[in-house]
Image (cartoon, rainbow, N blue to C red):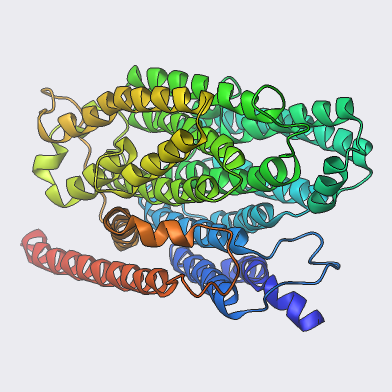
Length: 537
């Protein structure tokens, strides 16, 4: 029984032990960029084990020291794949970026692995104690990643702001959890749900705890009006850290929100169309969609624009959360999970392309820096355009179907959800302006005279990351039904689920990325060899 219990948390153990081993490797390694490959292999190994357990492991775990605190279900395994896969790609991006910008230090990957461990535990949290500890483990790692560029005042400011923002959020969330514990005397989410459903909990305490936990979670996902310093943190952090924050933090926190709000606090006695967290999240969804898109319109920095874009996507996810409650799971939950996966690969591709667009001293930050880049370097413009179009929701990309399924779930939910779905469509149309603006600068603008021009970096790590993310952006757009079926909290051995689709796609993406990186590296060496005689002469 103990062996079985350890097996079901095997993915977590792989990442945790891998982080400890990375600390030893870092102490003796001279080539720090190679640590990005090691960390990517660790994370992909954890994802592979999670997939194997999902469809070949035990059916369930008995309540105990592990089963009572960490969930073992389809939701946990799907988010394992999203978190580990996204972190692996972000690690490869860091391998190229940190070396190029001469801030290469091995502790980045150690922090990244332990933060990913916290994200995986948060998505599996079946108890409010686990939820809080996992959230803090995730957050502490993110604070360190934001402050990684130690010599930069902007990075230091961003880290302080994000730390204060996260501290307030954690305090509010912990206060809300304390009230829920006071109302029920329980910490386990499933037991808490039964207790509330039986009418044994004081409604006033439950409502107060639910309000504070909702606010704390809203802080963590960057929902308006709790987003104040999030764009500053995104802009000040090194871009691979920004990529990780935008993708993994959202995936983990929304996974926890499904368990806490939809499952534990979703009873009609405390959550309905007129009271509780559903109307609150619906209101947050509206203002997040509107403010996120309007603020992104006026940004001159591409990285900051993508930060506000991330905020607007949180509005879609909040709408999906209410639809998940309204529909009692089903398409509602699947739409949120598919959105998290589609948003992850789209953001990885967009941020990765932005990383590739700039080398040391010639970074791409503003729109003007991208002027004419598509004509000068079409190999980079293709993945950049694909990532931007997917974030915009252009068919047939992963981003289009992510928005489509959330809106479809909202329409099926009816009532106020229908009107918010209309607002979401209009907000998405507004967002097309600032997304298409990137393409206009890439292909239709030329740099001003004597203006700084971004020069793409040459890194096999970044090329591999772009190929892997780009493959899934296209694949999820061409066959969305297979991934929508995968994104469900079904039983571990659903005979109707073709899980081999993901396994094959993951293999193709990894092999394709490795081949592209090898070809890119060989070409660089050939070019360096041709240039050497000229220099000598």
